Length: 344
Ligand code: PMV
Image (cartoon, rainbow, N blue to C red; front, side):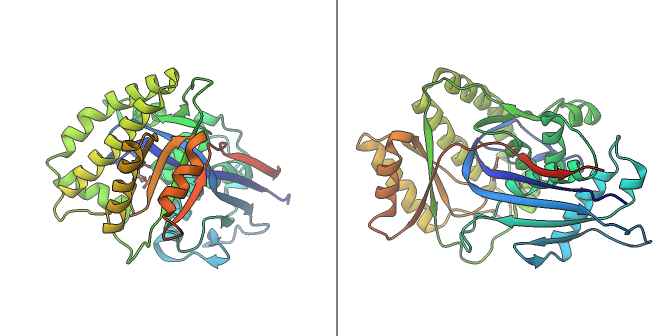
C-alpha cells in the first residue's frame, strides 16, 4: 500500500464586508456575499495522512490540534469534513476506504482568542483533497473549504478575496456557484492591519449558533441582508480604484451593522466588550488626528484595524498605548499552499 500524505498551509482572513447568517446550513450557503483580506499572520499548517492498513470496520479519522487529540464536537466536525472529501467524485475507492489522520499546528499566540477556523479548514481542505488523490481547481477548493467553515472559503486565496453567495433560487446551483475568488486591486493600494488582542474573558457563544439565532430572531437581519450585496460591490469598486478611505469607511460600517443585527437577536448576541469600545474610540481619535484607520470586529472582543502600510507603525504604537495593549501588526498574505505531497 502506498503512502498517501499531504501538508498544506493557510492564513487567517479578516472580512471587510462581513459574512453573518446562512441560508442553507447543510450546504453552508451564506445569506450574502462577503469580502476579506487574507493576512500574513496566524498560519495553520496541516498534514493529512491516510492510514496504511486501516480499512477495518469502524476505523475512524483521528486528529490532533497543536499536539492535543481532538475529541467531541470538534473531532466530529473534522470527521464529517473528511468523509465529505473522500466521498467526492474522483477519489479512488481503495483510497476512500482509508481513514485519515490529521495533524494541525497554529501559529496563533496562545490565549489570544484568535484561533481561526478559516485558516484551519482552508489548510485541511487543501491537505485532505491532495491526500485522497484529488486535483481540485482553486475555485473548487474554496467550495470544499466552505463546507468546513464558511469563512475558510476565502483563505484559499491571498490578498483581497470575495466569496459569492451564489445562486439563491436553487440549492444545487447555489452549491456550485458559492465560491471565493481574488479581487483585482489597484497597484498602489498598500494596506495593512493592526490586530488588537484583548482579554478574551469567558468564552462566549460560537459563530455557528450565534448566526442561527440571529437569522431566527433578529428583526434587523432582513435589513442586513438587503444592504450587504451592495456593500460588496462598493468594496470591490474601492479596491479597484485604490480608494482606502472608501474601503475603510465601508469596512467599519459593515462590522457595526453585523454587530447591530446580532445585538437585536433574542437573547442578544454580544461580542463587544468594554475594552473593544475603548479601541473603537482610539481608532476614531486616530482618524480625527488625520491618520486613516478603520476598525472591524468578528465573533469575539478583539479589534482589527485597517490602515495604509505606511501608517502601520504609528497605528500599532498608538493602539498599544505604551504597552497597555497587545497589538500584532500584519500585512496582506498568501493563499493556501500544498507544501508537500506523496501521491498514490
Ligand atoms: O468562521 P465562520 O465561518 O463560522 O464565520 C465567522 C464570521 C465572521 O468572522 C464573524 C465574519 C466573517 O465574514 O469572517
